[in-house]
Amino acid sequence: QVQLVESGGGLVQAGGSLRLSCSASGRTSSVYAMGWFRQAPGKARELVAVVSRNGGSRYYADSVPGRFTISRDDAWNTVYLEMTRLKPEDTANYYCAASFHTANYGYSYGDFSSWGQGTQVTVSS
Image (cartoon, rainbow, N blue to C red; front, side):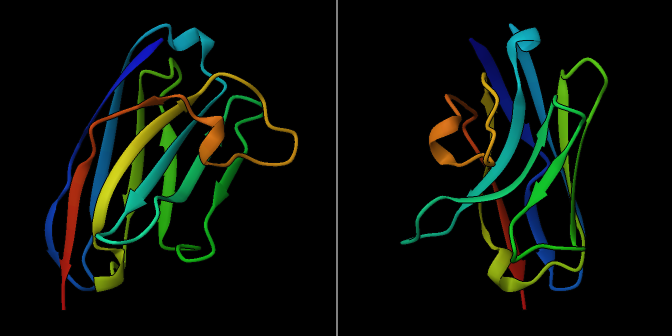
């Protein structure tokens, strides 16, 4: 398995930016994709962005196009989520997750089996 630790969350004003990091250790060579999810109080966990080992393809949720960018280092030891033009509705606990298989029709929550503890992002209006 893989151990994941998120960092970089915090309090930011609307319109500001934050960069989240996810450090991975363990069998990172077995990872097929890394994703960022978020969960706001009283809401379901939402997939925000995914980067896959298959050609480095990226997926973004409809709520964040053009504002968030997912990237990774070459060794798949660290995955980043660059968040710009933040809005109060982006407030949530953000989780990093790893998937160990390919997903021909796109990744979803059930495809990820290793999870970090989360980092809180709060956007004030």
